[in-house]
Figure 1 (cartoon, rainbow, N blue to C red):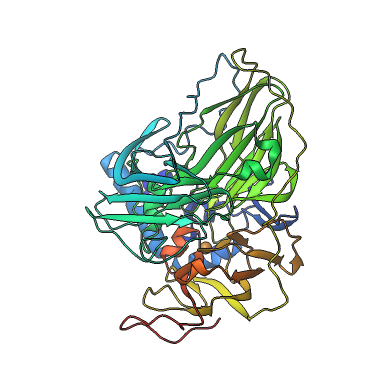
Figure 2 (figure 1 turned 90 degrees about the vertical axis):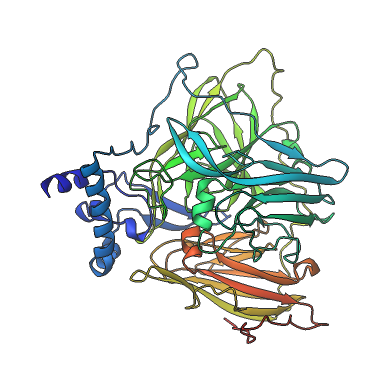
Length: 563
Ligand SMILES: [Cu+2]
C-alpha cells in the first residue's frame, strides 16, 4: 500500500474530466499564481469568463460523493502497473523544451499535407477509415485515421462544386462522417449524421456546395453517439476548405497559408488510446499531425495560419512570444474587424484564422500555454506545439509587406431581429454522480425529436450552462449570430457555428432557420465529445411549412419538446 501511495503521489496530475479531478488535486488543493487559466473572449475582445484552474472546492464536494469509483479505478490501474512492472509513460516529452537556435533545432519540418482538390466542379475522393499505428513524437500510438493520415486529409472545394466521397469503413466498429459547419442538406446521402456505416461497409456522401456558400475552413469527423470521443481522439477527422476567404480578405492572397489541424491524444499506460480517454498518463497535443514540428518564416513575412480545433475535448490556448498575431477569421468566416491578440484560444470544433507576422530573424516557440475548463472540467498542460524559425531563405523572394487589412464579406450580415418566431431556453447540465450530461434535463435519444421548427423562422435561443465546467454549443447545418454573453451585448463580427458557454453563465444567439437546404433532422449539442457521448445532444427537425413535419418512425415521439 505504501508503494501504491508513493506511486500515486509521483504521478502527473490528471488533466481531464470530472473523474480526473482525482487524488492528486485533492492533495494539492491550493491555488498557485502560475496555474493555468482558461479565458474565453467574446469577439469584441472582452474576457467573458476566467476560470481559476486551481479552484477545486466544488470538485472536492463532488469527490466525496462519487470518487470511490474513480479512486478504485485509478488504484487498480496503478496497482496493475506496479505489479506488472509496467512503466509510467512520460506525460509530456516535449514540455517547455525551450528555444533552440536554427542549427540546434531538432524539430521535424512540417510534412506536406495529404490534400485533395476539386477539378471541373467535382471532388471525387475515396476515404478509408481504418485503425492505424501512428508515430507521434517519441511514441507510436494506436490511432484511427482517414486514408492513413493522422493530421487528416484536406479537402479543397470551391463554392458550386460537388463533393463525392466514397467512404469505406474498415474499422471494427460502426462510424460515419459529419461535415461540420457546412450549410447543406442533412438528408439522404448528404450531411446525414444519423446514418451509421457498419464495419466493412461503404457509403457515398454526395454534397453539393451551394454557389453562395460561405468560404472558409470547415472540417469533417465521425459523429457516432457513444463513441465520437474515442474515434475523433484516435484521429478520425480531416479539414475541408471552401476556397474564397482570400478574396474576402485580399491582403491574405499573397501569403503562405498553413492548415493547422489541432488534435490531442490521451494515451493509456501502454500508449494506446484510453477506452474512455482520461489521460492519467498525460496528453499529447499535436499540430498538423505532428509533435512540435518546425515551421519556417522569413523576416518581415506574414503567414495565414488556419487553426481548426479537431480535438475531442481539448482547448488549445496558444501563445507565440516575439511574433505579432492578428485574428482575421472565426468558424470559416472573416472577422469583420480583425484585431491583434496575445493568445489564440481554439476549443473543440472551433476554427480561428490568424495572421502571424515575424519581424526579425530568430527561433520562437508556439506554446500550448495550458488551459482548464473549470472545477468539474478538464486541464490541459503546457506543451510546445511548434518551433518557429525565422530566417532569410535566399531561394525565396523577399516577402512583401502585408497590404491594408480590408474585409470584403457582404454576406456577413447580422440576422434580422424584427420577426422572432420563438424564444427558447437550452440548458446544459450534468450529474457528477451518474456521469450523464443533459440538454433540458434529457440525454440524447435518436428516436426523439426535441424540437420542430418551420422553415423560414428566425428564433432566439438562450443557451444556459448550469454546471461547473465550460460547454461548447454547436448546431449543424447553419451559422448563427451571438447576441450576448452573460447579458453583455456582443458587437457583430460575423456568424459562427460554435460558441463557448461560460460556467453558470448564458449566451443568447439568433438563429436563421431560413435556408431551404436545411430541411430535415439534425443535431445540436455540446462539442466536447465526452459530454456529447454521455448525453448532451438533442435533435431538431426543420420542416417545410407547406408539407408539414416529417412522419415519425414507429416508436418516435411525435410531440415537439419546446425548450
Ligand atoms: Cu460540454
